[in-house]
Image (tube, rainbow, N blue to C red; front, top):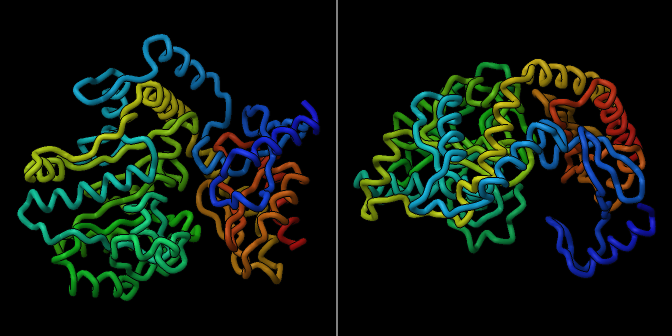
Length: 429
């Protein structure tokens, strides 16, 4: 393909397509992709880019992987989809069994949905319906953390940070929730009691109306790419138990190895009442999410007036997605993923460290396969995106954050190219 083909695709796109977090009036910077393989995106104009985003953190095995391609092809020969109401199928059953086996023992039930935001919606509804089943219908509210992000649907938006988050425009339409100050203790440090003072105060004053606390364990994602103490989670769980409040872990971003553990909850050895999974679940091939809960939660939900959990997505437990997820998780477990994530963390730390000396940089931090340069001021996407493409890498900053969450298979050489480009672009800003 050629530059003229790219320009034609861009023009057609701009007449009909609306992109995420982008204006439909002003022209965003667009780069048409022809194909993808390994860690590289091939553009229609002939250029190739090293992908530092893993397609918003989900393509952990890279692109066009033969194992996942085969799983899709094999499942297509049987069926691509069948409704899950009143029917079941082997891929969903095997995937549910595998997720239960990999997560803490008490998480025994899996409810499938078709995106991370919906997995969070499911968790919130489970928590509310659980307390109805237990004769405490006043427990309707959620307690979330500042700097948290849990998705773009209305319920999920209600537990995103209402001030620094992306959803201030909708504040009047959202359920009013409780928000505690984000933990300040860095990852790897023991969390002092005063770091939980905000959570403790809210639970003491309003615990009888709170159904659940929802947090992203260890790594707060799109709300700020913040890493915090695993010990905070241990103390938070104790507070929830004391005040009779459920604990929900949103591991949409952190699940399947991103922080160096298979699940971020393992850093604290804490088991939530409800666990949300998504993104990397299918290796980035298609959309699928899962909400896991304990037998106690399932029993409470089913003891409510409805007698069943009142949710049912059309594409719930899509066989094609479940088969691909099975192949992706098994592929991950069969590889040296932990060594790769540790290697990536080392490379990211070394490669991004020079940015710390730049005046426009507020912080540089890394955890697992995540590397972040935080600036003092927000970037101009129209300016910065082409700068990365010119350097042969795909990095998608937001706000003040220039960050990467690359596929686990990325080589040392490609990681060095990626981090050098990040430092170079930040230096130019």
